[in-house]
Length: 243
Image (tube, rainbow, N blue to C red; front, top):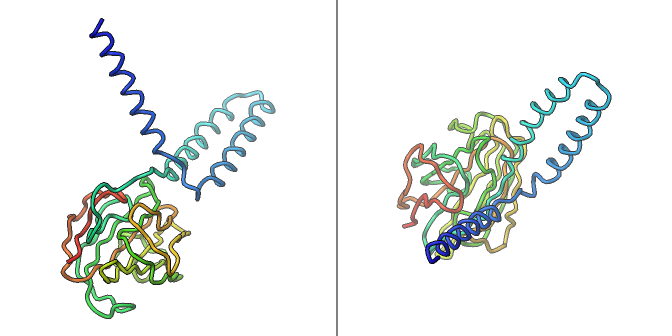
């Protein structure tokens, strides 16, 4: 009897954990309209094909093709709820899901006019595309720049592609530049950060649609905590420590 009770308790515990995990997955607000409208169109066309055409092949072909496309869009707009565990002082966390494509010292001549440590994360269409603030602090300014749509992993994409720049001043007075970059497929950068507002790790900085990239420019002396091609989890992976 005792063993049976223990088994039931274990099963209930596993179910509770599954429910908690499901609650942490939601759809990003940037995709709710597109997903809703496309679902209604999918249903409407599906009904028309089913009732107006005697042959069922067009209906099932339509459902297979466009149902798969809709499911991919649903996966793209997923937005997990995340919280960073631990002290955030002097830590820089990944602003996006993806993989590390750049870790190098570079000359930043637009704002700093000196060398900075640049760490870049490339996001494929399969990654979560929400962006998080990489540090606690205060938003100094936000600036949007029109440009080209080179492949996001290319070095020239950082300066030549359409991008949004967010400058954040940390509590220790360090200026950190975050750059959201549009890629070859991306055509829309959404930035929620506003000049003068306090910002914190765990908060959303913005959203980039389809394949894209995020650059973080840090003061020299910052210590990278990642390596090339390492996968990152937004708001979870520590990418650097400030000096």
